[in-house]
Amino acid sequence: MTAPLLVAGVGNIFLADDAFGPEVIRALEQRPLPTQVRVRDYGIRGLDLAYDLLGGCATAVLVDAARRGQRPGTLSLIEAEPPDGTVPPEAHGMDPAKVLALATHLGEEPLPRVLVLACEPEVLPAGDEDILPGLSAAVRAAVAPAVTALHALVPLLLADPAAPAAALGRSMENGPPHPAALPARTPATAEDR
Image 1: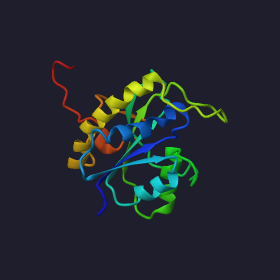
Image 2 (image 1 turned 45 degrees about the vertical axis):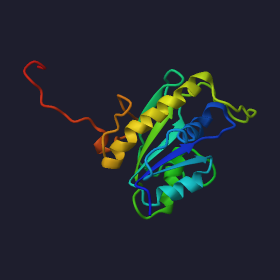
Image 3 (image 1 turned 135 degrees about the vertical axis):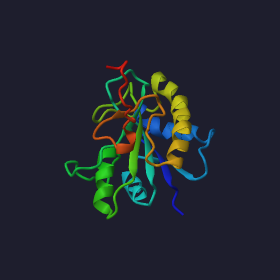
Image 4 (image 1 turned 180 degrees about the vertical axis):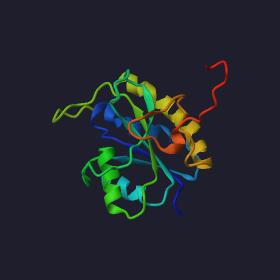
């Protein structure tokens, strides 16, 4: 039986803050999510993640380090942009946009809704730099809040896979948001005018 929700840690444990996703998955061992959630550390195995995205889950939450121009350690919840054909699929590596493109290329069914719980990194090696194991202090401090955020977000997504993604107080989108992620509009009152 396929789990309705996939929580996927992605990142390279040897590249400093890129290890954020795997570290959050490891921390979830101490505070497990409900049993109907599939929790997995994919590391840099993009092909495995692409196939699992095609495995029938309704929603996937990728946990990753991502530069968003914020203070290091800041968490953002991002509604992933559906692949539009401009990003080439890649079977080797773990660029989430390329993994989504690969999954789209491999499958006949539409992808599940994909959210990204992203942490602003402080230290990410550029290019062919040496191995830098270990998280920076700012990103290490964000691991526990990320676990707490997942414990708030997951029950909402299990109850309704299209639920608004506002577990962090505000959602940030990097592309056209999933319709369910948009806040409900309330009619203007005379005081608002």
